[in-house]
Length: 315
Image (cartoon, rainbow, N blue to C red; front, side, top):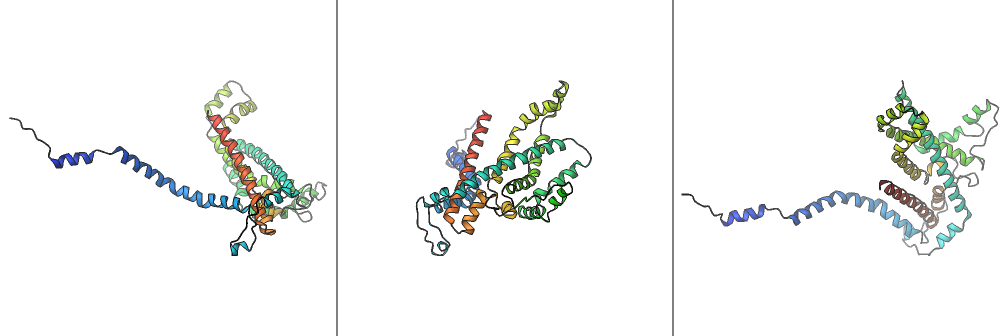
């Protein structure tokens, strides 16, 4: 004779507790996700958000050295902005920043891509040569600037001494208003070539070899293969290289200070050096904040175009 066991109250309670609550599980999952994200958000707010907001507020204040002790910085409206935009040096620095950035990016990218394609083929001592080319990238920017300042010296510089062997007169690389900006661009190109080469070389290593084999069977020339296969496939890597290069070049300061200090006659003055000059030489922190905000705005506009281009390409 079979017996039926009726679960008691304790068994019923334990069964109810064993049933997971979807809402509670979802809340726990959400809290866990925020627990991982919160440190990064807090870091961004403290070290990026606060300085950015503080710089924007400072650009509308009459901020002097005494403000650091008194804490009193009265608002002066758009006076700082009018002062900066009304100064002819700002327009000159903006134009020279554009020239410096474009010249540096073109030189670094073209030479870096050529070296990446060259080293993409295996040959003896290829790894050793790649390591040697990385040296300019590993040297601190200020050290590179000081060394190149001695190399480009008009009277005792190594470069002019070498050119003198071919009958070329001493060129005032860093003391001529017509040549100084070009000299600074060339030095920055020398510094940035290793970074471009390494990133582009890594991208070339990831390209599928089957496509090149098919192109070879079809009789495509080396230039046609590079133009129709390598460049299109390498486009995402090229975009990253150009964006990172732009962000590091448009705000450059230490290299220009080490080479020319913005001279001669402000011929190498950029927005980065102008911010430094206004804030820490003239002690006009409001004007320096204005120029800094312009730099942030330029970078933000460039980033927006970059993100929109990537989104359109993804679709």
